[in-house]
Length: 282
Image 1 (cartoon, rainbow, N blue to C red):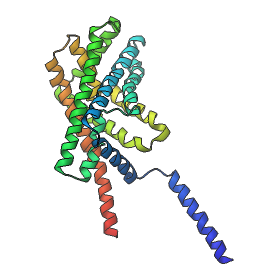
Image 2: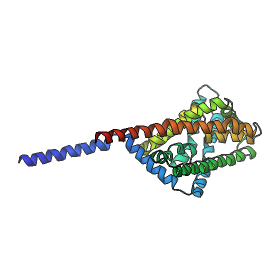
Image 3: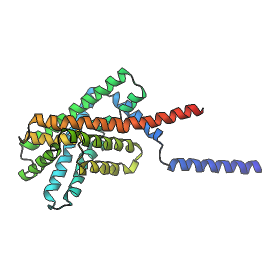
Image 4: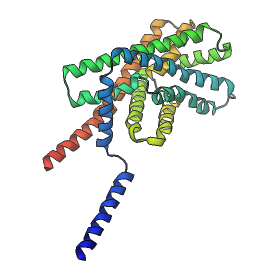
């Protein structure tokens, strides 16, 4: 009788522990493992597949400029207008991330995890291959959209003027400030990627909130910002050299530093430290 009661009690305790584990937030190790597996999958893809996905992402990121510019044009000129208009900035990210397209700044985290796990020249070359293909494809997509916006009458002149104003804002701070703002943007976007694997039904809100902060703070995102500055250059209001040297290069460097150092390396370090502690305990 006592044995039966004990068995029943143990079974109830096990069920409660399983239910508690199911309801608790995933540990950093679980998130790290999910991103690690995704990174391995991304690194196994062919350059051709990465390129076409990256090109689609570059085009889609232009939707951030379009949505923000159109909303700015139609909203009344008041102090709160940027707070609402910057909701449009999230549109391109929503399309790209939910559509599983290749965005360069996401890749400052995902493929870096396999590299940090196994630091070999082969893994480094594979990461650089992925980065190079995706970056070029993203920028070509932004360029194609910028040329279409600047040289066609798809949008009325007043709205095209808003697009040009966005490009001027992105380019105005100068190399050093764009670099610093790029670090913040890279940090936030990589943090967003870190949060997504177990966000479940909250995925959309994670994307909107994190990218809204990037937009409203004027942090420099190399792809979303390139759509804006390329449109400015295509309209003849800035030189291509100024656009590339004054925005694309510093934003790229900042995004890499923010994503790789502040998110990928730090989160990998905490998981590696936990593993070392577990090994020492054994």
